[in-house]
Image: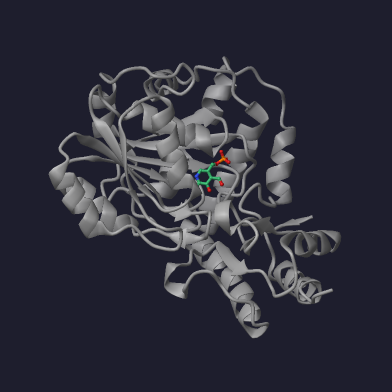
Length: 360
Ligand SMILES: Cc1ncc(COP(=O)(O)O)c(C=O)c1O
């Protein structure tokens, strides 16, 4: 099956085969070596040249575990968080903080608009109680790319902490984490890194780690300091999904061999193939090109064809597309081009789409 949903993604045979390596105990040196390899590859891929300024914290869990860990671990007593919310995943950040009864404010936007850096600046000047600003890098809800560097600059100039959910963007979009002084960036194995779901990570700026040490512990499983201290000793606090780590390690090797910039270009090219053909077919995109990411395109459903019909016809041909969420549920469909896809597979999908989108 060709997966055109934003994770899990199709992986290479090399990554799949890595699942079959020997059974090991996570309290043995073999696991320590695996963990250190993963951490060092993460730093090399995402903070090149500034590896010593960041720590890569690896967590067994889906992307949400990394986001929740970053949020819960970054807030001192009595301070608030400000979330820039323009989609399902921004909303989720707010909900996580609200659920734990921690102070959260929002700058909320409709799902096709970008957060406004000037409004953020004003809010941070007016609200000294805000300690952390949270934002999603690539809103998977619509495929919208948020203005990370502009927002990061304001957060940094205002001496606040930036938590960036880059779960669906890392390795799919260029991001200069170190240059923008971003304190926390969350990512996951099973999207643009082309590993399997089940392992996620937070890149944390070292200067912030010692500050976090004094912050309250709000979760047993998701307290980042617990991971940082254990992983510093070469172990992990909880039983990891060892085989998924093997595959993650291999996927990171593939990423480094390809090069992050080349991976980003490959995805950009795949997205162009899809966008050009869809435009020829008269299928209307939800977002203007300057807001679109390299890896997801949201389209209005063709006239007279329901999502379910389109989905089922395509699935019968071997392609999985993705529905809209919330109030876009019955209006749009999404096509992701993350993963080990070939151009031939993308053309195959587009041919199948042309047939499947005909009404009746
Ligand atoms: C931007 C973003 N953040 C967080 C998540 C949550 O990841 P998971 O479903 O792996 O928990 C997703 C999932 O698609 C996402 O796209």
